[in-house]
Image 1: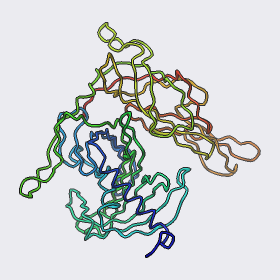
Image 2: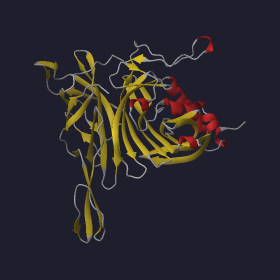
Image 3: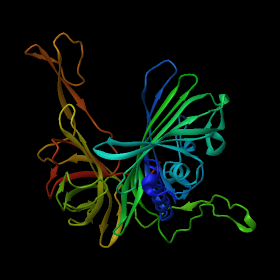
Image 4: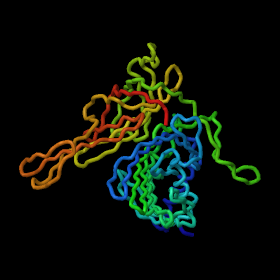
Length: 425
């Protein structure tokens, strides 16, 4: 009988990762998240440019997904592309691909070894799922067809969490007029309550290229994830009577978190210090800094509790050490009633190192022809000094900013100002 030491590299670890992923999917509750899709489009003979931004509410149990417009009363099985007039949208970004690649699929795996990814040591496997076993279907206006998949995934050898999954479609039917379809999903631990922490997608990228040369690029972010109310009736299509499959049902929206009126300006102060040692996904707490009036009364009293999490905490060293920080607020509690914190940040407070745009100087030869975006070149000692400005995308409920240096320190009382939005498509 073979012992663990005699197994090929990565086999025992892969078995552990698969069991861990299966357990994560089995204990995943009904979860609802806000999906924000920043879409770019390149015509057959043109350049890539922003197309639009789409926001959807997605409800999942790790096996199937339902969609609705934000604030809508019903979720449905309609593909997310039905919510847009044109362009491309992907689905299956929660547990569907994880289940297919690591739990149920007839996948061939090859262990590559450990790699350094964003400052972490992760184990990598390459895989292939032939079209006859994949069950994956591509839908375009030109038609639909089954495809195979190949790609890679990375897992943490210590926690066994999958950190990233990449999928590249293969054997695409010629009638589809699609030459490339690539999806990459980044996962992270997400706290949904005091005693519940689950593995969910945090962001994803989706690219589709047609035979004509048209290209669709999507950058997808998931925010405001929460457990869907236990008192809400949901039908995810469990098997029906006499072995017949049940219809993929609809569900009403969770009313546990009540909506706030649009246009309220809410100043929030942190209740605890945030440093570089805090992990992404860690819970954060704040308080409303001053009374928020509505029609002459204090709609939200100063001191009301605001809750959220660390959304981003990315470390970069090139061209200078800096961090990208994202603070996500999801709810505010007023006199024991919880309200959904759906707002745009309008002001980020002052603190040492905190900036909303990052100016990154670098050097090039004086004879170089490079220019600068937002800033001009100047010569010093035979070198051309050039500045570049970097900005980040805005997400509702997320304050994203830069921090100069590699030792983050946001003090107690760090202030952000928000303006509530109407939950509408």
